[in-house]
Length: 197
Image 1 (spheres, rainbow, N blue to C red):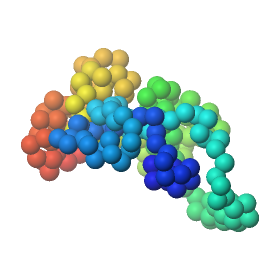
Image 2 (image 1 turned 30 degrees about the horizontal axis):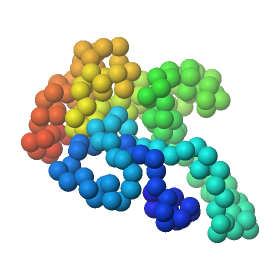
Image 3 (image 1 turned 90 degrees about the vertical axis):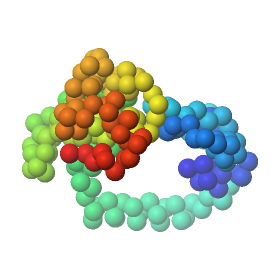
Image 4 (image 1 turned 90 degrees about the horizontal axis):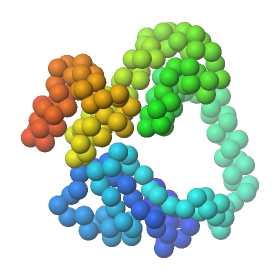
């Protein structure tokens, strides 16, 4: 993303800061050198922070005719290739996970369908809303537990659990009995020992 911004905005472009959902490496100087901005590790999400006004910058090399041709082709491809509902749902939920608006009703409203219609389509795909949400929460939880040093209580809050004990119970259910503490300890020793159930 940084390379894309520099291609569009000039080679001197730099974010205000960089957030990384990763542990602090032994040598973080390559990160500071590449991003040319403060880098914060052990974050709940990975993000580039920059002023919103930069979204309105004009791209000097923009080609209006090429843009129209590409937009037309994208519309044609979208009509041919229908994106899988489960993938769309996961992408939508991932964006909303931190905000906490992950109810079936809220997501159905965003998809402009009734909740029962959403559930019918998910059932036809062999899954359900709760299953998709749990898979996503476990995916994010595994990444944060294994790749950061965030306290488990903070991870629990980031995934909208009412309390850390509820997060621990859910994690153990998802992982086939492995607690988040044990997952973190064993993943640090040998990540191959921990494969999702």
